[in-house]
Length: 353
Ligand code: NAD
Ligand code: ZN
Figure 1 (spheres, helix red, strand yellow):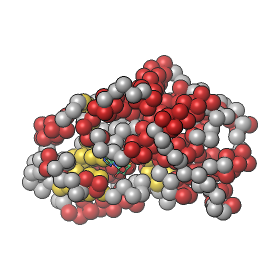
Figure 2: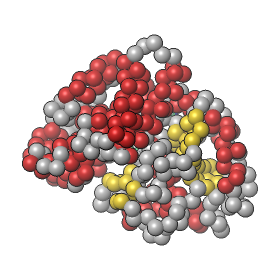
Figure 3: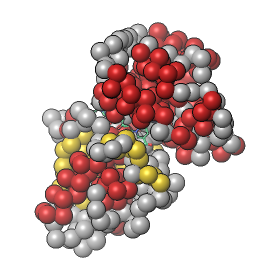
Figure 4: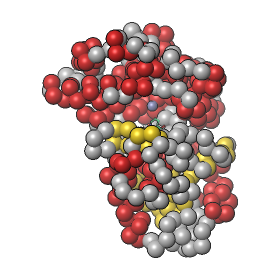
């Protein structure tokens, strides 16, 4: 779990006080920042207290993070600095938060990030790392994983060294997220709740966080009596609770299928989950009905015909990637999941997207 968190409008202004005690001599702080903020320096850059050789590295999020990208950033930092950094501060959405967690891990562990995709493969403690979300829903700010696309698979580095040492939750930072993206990433949180609460892995820990996050999602996405400020603050907390819920359970069918889509077509996580979840009435009847209401309420039109032009070979890979995520299927369908889902059923579902 994340041991330290601050919350509130303007909380980002505490960044200097928060990181200063962690400064190790002249070893720099490296800020990994979503390049969407590059041309809006007053919002983030001017508020970052750079000292000594501290550096801001802007990172594009056109594609979701890859193990090769983590390796490149780590190589650059090792090449540019004599010392292991005092800390890595990630400022952005799920993509940047995951990238920052992975870079912090790989600065103290040998080899490639791809070597650590899986569960508990990391040996050495990561460097101090701080997460500052600027869009809410993924729960990446609180989770024990960092999802990366590697040469062979899309899979997280799940370890006790992955979670941030400190998170700064400042709802003001998410106020300008474009509407569609706000919805897609917000729905990631909603889908985490449904998949966790409807799953066979459910337990009191996951349920208590999942139910709270689900209530918040319903308020945020279906009611019109909240101010924008209230919506932003509640969404930030929904994302946190949704992430906490899956920390002790698992996601399910939508995530397994969305990983397959992402691996073959590069479909991004939030929108990919929405495209898939929209067709999962059979698995999550109530959850999908409410999702459709939310979609309508916010005038969201999802892409259609997503798999219209995929080849048989691509469909095979998609299906294999999805089915390889065994814990997700076991959570969704129970111990005998192999008797309930197979390549043919899954291919038909993919073709319907
Ligand atoms: P993202 O980080 O890719 O950002 C989506 C878009 O929003 C980008 O174009 C970005 O530039 C823009 N954006 C971000 N903040 C903004 C702001 N304040 N104003 C304007 N634009 C802004 O999207 P995401 O949905 O947050 O994250 C998706 C990633 O999270 C995927 O890589 C997925 O695998 C990962 N993920 C991780 C976990 C985990 O537990 N680690 C869980 C779910 C998803
Ligand atoms: Zn997700």
